Each structure stands twice: as structure tokens, then as C-alpha cells.
Length: 173
Ligand SMILES: CC(C)(COP(=O)(O)OP(=O)(O)OC[C@H]1O[C@@H](n2cnc3c(N)ncnc32)[C@H](O)[C@@H]1OP(=O)(O)O)[C@@H](O)C(=O)NCCC(=O)NCCS
Image 1: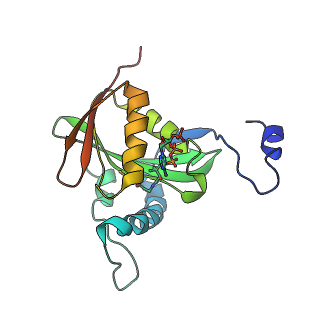
Image 2: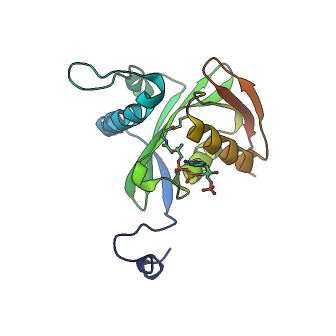
């Protein structure tokens, strides 16, 4: 979208489309991921009723492993160069898994999540699993439509916490 097109939306309004990029988060960006994780876990507390600790912070003990353990990959999502979210991918039980995925509220419902997810899937050709909590109905709608459009279809099974979509990310030709 050009600046002119954007300006037509009027002052203070949001553009409809962004240049989305998914970039590996370096170890030096771990604090950035930790901050975004707080926003994500706050959103999630609506579904899992988690509490903050005495410092007012949510705990997510797996995050350091994304820079120390093989089979885990941390990504920052940017929209027009600005931080717009993150994705955490892991490989377990023979499949890539979207362990966590988050788009900041200001960027939601503008295709940022879909474009970021497509870029992440394309990086890891092979079998994938994505799982949502049953109560997170927005995420269920999001993943069903994004995966359906990306992979052309998926199998869905019931996981311990909610639906799981199983699909194949094709090799690039
Ligand atoms: C779920 C989430 C990642 C969606 O990101 P987003 O950038 O807003 O999604 P997009 O704009 O790319 O939406 C793509 C499609 O998903 C579906 N979708 C997304 N948000 C939706 C909503 N609130 N209600 C219904 N459908 C929705 C639509 O089909 C949409 O396509 P459309 O706009 O052409 O109708 C974002 O809401 C989020 O970060 N939520 C909190 C964290 C979370 O739940 N993460 C998922 C963990 S499993």
C-alpha cells in the first residue's frame, strides 16, 4: 500500500495491509520476546485463568529454551518494520508445532497473522500440528481458515485442550 492509499483512510486510521516479515529473534532480542509474552499471556489468562506472580508478571518457563535447545525456533513478526507479534515453533513427536503465536491488538484483523503464519509454515516443510484451547474460539476460526487456505485442507482431531489441525507444509518448488 502506498502512502497515498494509506492517507485516503484518513488521519489516525489504520492501513488495511502491511508488509509483513518473520525474522528469527536473536538471543539479544530475548527481552523483547519476554515483554511480548506478557501481553500474550494476559490475553490468554481469559482462557486458562492464570495469575501473575508477586512481581505482577506471568511465568512462561519455556522461553529461554528457544535459544538453548535444538528443535525450537523463536521469531519476531514485523509489520511495515514495526514489531507486530511473535511466533514460537518447536519440533516434537515428528511434527513441527506452532507452540505460541501472537499478533498485537493494533494489527489484528488486517491479515498480519495470516501472512506471518504462512511465512512460518513455508520455512518448515513437512508435517505440522497446530492446537488451540477449546475456549479460544477466535484462534480456532483463525487457524482453520489460515491452514485451510495455506495447505488446501487439514485433518482435525481432538487434543487434550482443544482441536488440533494436522497438515503438510509443502516443499518449495
Ligand atoms: C488469533 C490471532 C493470531 C489472529 O491474528 P490476526 O492478524 O488478527 O488474523 P488475520 O487478520 O490474519 O485473520 C485471518 C483470518 O482468520 C480469521 N479470523 C481472525 N480473527 C478473527 C476473529 N476475531 N473472528 C473471526 N475470525 C477471525 C478470519 O477468517 C480471517 O480472515 P478474514 O479477515 O479474511 O475474514 C490474534 O487474534 C491473536 O494474536 N490473538 C491472541 C493470541 C492467540 O490466541 N494466539 C493463537 C494461539 S493458538
